[in-house]
Image (cartoon, rainbow, N blue to C red; front, side, top):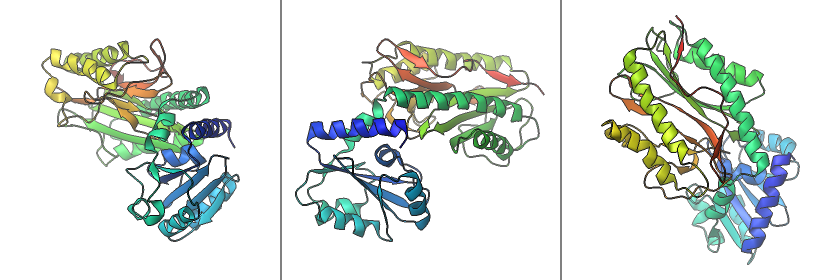
Length: 367
């Protein structure tokens, strides 16, 4: 058991004892497994998985695939592994044997209805907020994992810059990055990118388009270390940046710095978003802060690439010390196209700690 997982178990048991909870049922799949990973330190690769965690530390892990079961037997020797073709049936049968114990489940949005709507789960309470609180406030060892992920993200971005050469396809850039991460012992990375000019309105999975002189190339790199993700967003120009590109990017720098300037424990997510958006409004670019052009003005990072809270003007989550997140005013600019900027940070009582060493400026590569 890793030190970070030992700490998570300690915190989880303490939270369960405080609320009188005797067991927690959590769900995960190959895309989103932050709740499951917090409790078990196991990320499923094939199919779905659920786990029952008891206040005495006993862990029962239910998986669909034989491959996941074999891997879990090696990676989580502290858990009882149950491989079954019908997870719903197996979990409901287990819940039926728990009698009148107080059981909670999480997350409510992903829990299979065959379980949550069953007679066996009729007394199971929604425990999403219990786990959300643990996911939001990181312990020092968790923050260190995010910090290490950010360091490898910075190194990966340097590889990305070297790869951005005229004539190369987007998928070739990704291949270079993924090779670097794997060789560095980093098996997980979420990444999207965009390349082109004023016609580009967002980022996407890599395609066959080839890099051209003068392109804006945007990306967000999100590698994970010990299961914890850190994200860095940067924009570069292939060749010398134009005045229009430099002037446009100044707005993004100002927006990141405006949001970061008020970032500290006790500030609401909505306040950060408003600070960023007000910069765009100042330059009559407020429409590009709407959902037509952008999704969020930042978000949490941790055991998932896009944890709560989302940084939006209607999200009033109070940011605590120990939260890790990225402030990124990523959106379209009508003069030059889509631009991005931001990096992972940790909220502190008096401000924040940034983990990236990359400069907050419009970067470029020679042609």
